[in-house]
Image 1 (cartoon, rainbow, N blue to C red):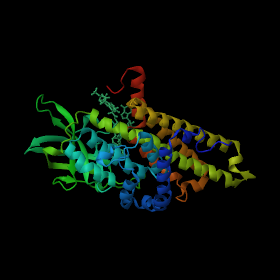
Image 2: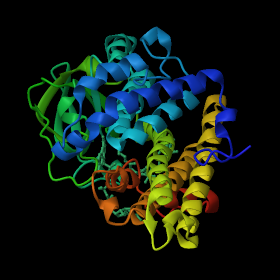
Image 3: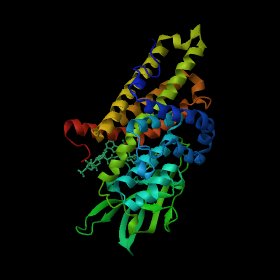
Image 4: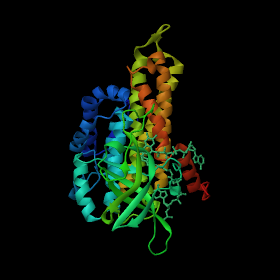
Amino acid sequence: MANDPSDFYAVAELLSPEERQVQGTVRRFVDEEYLPLVRHHFEAGTFPTELIPMLGRLGCLGPTIPMEYGGGGLNSVCYGLMAQELERGDSGLRSAASVQSSLVMYPILTFGSEDQKHHWLPRMAKGEAVGCFGLTEPDYGSNPGGMITRARRERDGFVLNGTKRWITNGSIADVAVVWAKLADEDSGQDVIRGFLVEKDRDGFERPLMHGKWSLRASITSELIFEDCWIPEENLLPKSGNLKSPLMCLTQARYGISWGAIGAALACYECALDYSKSRVMFSRPIGGYQLVQSKLVGMMAEITKAQLLSWRLGRMKDEGTMTPDQVSLAKMNNVSQALAIARTARDILGANGITDDYPIMRHMMNLETVNTYEGTEDIHRLTLGRAITGLSAFE
Ligand code: TGC
Ligand code: FAD
């Protein structure tokens, strides 16, 4: 039996019937509902917000959140496969779902009160409410612990001041999970805490960011807080210190490791097809050794990435996955997907730079994906610290 060029080690056979069904359902949605729209949105720099309730119906918003809060109660491999299929469409689509699921619903579930969970999670799972996650600031990206945004206690609540930048879903969000420094009541020392800020609070602005060449079919915004008062009950009561937002990042990075495989597959499959029909000199370019070498390199890296993420997913569901293992999968799969996109573009020659093919769009997107959720360098240094016991961050 011939090997499947897109699944050379038959990873599909390692999946349960439910996992395969989830993957197939999301794949059909992307093919039928999303891909016909993406060119327009990428060109216009917009996101198809009308698809958000559909993502909810498909179970892509909070798939691993317990069913008692309206989530899907699915395992992490299902979540990963969803991310893979969404990003086969576009990184912007996967980003919207990742932020909602891993960076908004997860912290509300993990650090929130029962009231916060019941108020937000069921609506978010249906796509009736959208969230965003504000950690990065203009001067604090890779080093979020240095953040300037502050909360101070006032009038049975808190007053927020500061600016968050590069925030996915910011301008369309009903609520922002915002990380800010707050003086601890007992010690007086600054502690990073999470706060829920609804979109219509006085002193809260969410201007859209313009001029991106990457992730164009995704909303990216600033969040500006000027003496923005929120009530006491908007504090995420169980959040405490930098570890809390970093725990959220671990969830999102896990999904991104799968998502990158989707973008890589879209580019590789396009280049493979093209190489079999494009005749130059005397034969299809796929018959030349140099082109075969490029295609085999792409297939080998995709196969390794598939195995890495599958194993990571199984460990996540067993409860043994570590953040450092997530760093390896995020770093490897995204940097390899970016390399694959660049090679695929090369195989299509001039046609590769046009929007008749998805490759250049994925390539531009992957420049962002390689940077957000921890740059390639930051994950490399995290892994360096893990294996040597010596931190390069201090
Ligand atoms: P460090 O001392 O290493 O850690 C502080 C505490 O946190 C723990 N920890 C983690 N816990 C869970 N998951 C992780 N990934 C964790 N990494 C660290 C750590 O054990 C420690 O715990 P404790 O109990 O000792 O207090 O902190 P550091 O200040 O040295 O920073 C480390 C560093 C550089 C790795 C970290 O700050 C980092 O990851 N920087 C990258 C920032 C980043 O990824 N930002 C992403 C913003 S959100 C985003 O990009 C969304 S894009 C979404 C989309 O559209 O899809
Ligand atoms: P910097 O931290 O300034 O890094 C610049 C360069 O320096 C990088 O190459 C980096 O690897 C290198 N570098 C930094 N420190 C070191 C070091 N110690 N050693 C060696 N090299 C180093 N953030 C959110 O909070 N929420 C979001 O929803 C969100 N969405 C995003 C959407 C988009 C489209 C983009 C582009 C970004 C988004 N981000 C979001 C922000 C993202 O997480 C940051 O851009 C990322 O963490 C890197 O920070 P920075 O851009 O400030 O780069």
